[in-house]
Image (cartoon, rainbow, N blue to C red; front, side, top):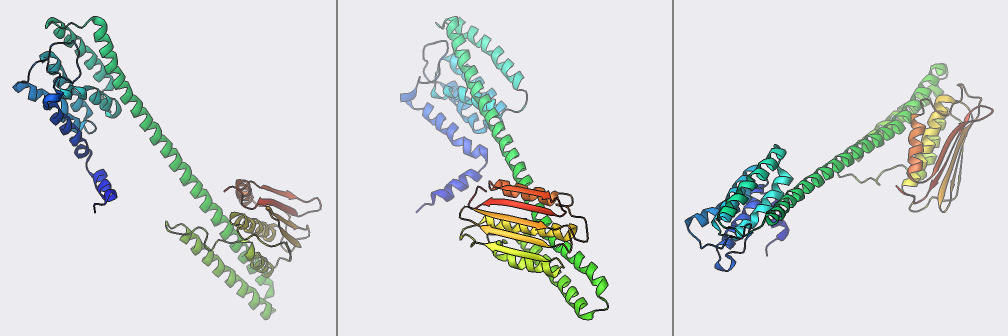
Length: 384
């Protein structure tokens, strides 16, 4: 059996001239049929004349150039117009004369240069054609010639409309592509910020603490081991990110979720941050994006705690509800550094966008007695 899909694909890969040629050949063949003689476009209403040698030339001029109506629309329009003029003056009125509006539509849609000049030349050439037909005894009145000219102008206008529609669609696709690339760059930047900032901050804090543990070998060894483990985790997460950028990746595989919050909290404790973790309820079976965003909120808040409230008691509370996940991360004001809800704010801004994209709410504020508190309400199954 013939695979129609494969045939269609092969046809689409053919050159545009090859694809347009059959229509012109079909029109030429149909014009030779006796039953269709005199069924073409008529202007001037001259009596129909029998075929002679010139009639075959006229048919060829009017039909065969349609093969290049998209590749060379100006050439197509010039040849078809010449054939049309001969057809009307000689009175053949072959079926191929219907190619004139088709050539005009194609020129209006595909002609790139000298469009205005083309319109002026065609309009000017129409006047001597009308005068020639009138001298040959045509019974057409002036208003008839005007109506026919308007019909030709309408064909050109249809081509112009098709051209503008195609250009608008191309512009829309360009904007969509740019927006998609920008969104993808933003997504990658967020993931890099979340992964790199958290792990590197933990490593820096642990390395600073190691300076003061040279006299305590056991604690120094544990601290350096924690730095090594954090570095390895960072490398693993970065490799996972690179895997996500592949075209055939599964976006749901290996993404962090609320089930990994205990591990995240434990790593933060090993970096020297006292963290109290309270989790209420059970994660939904299909939390999806909500769980991923919840993990990122807690991760960024703990990163800020390490950077700006190191050593300060930190509380993480996560409550799983039927319709939403509530997150609150707070620090006291007794850390080794001044409390702040975040350095440049880039991470918090990214979190706000993530949460709001799911239809939730996000806030990050300083506390009156020092420290900061981050709160988020993330709908389960919200829009993505």
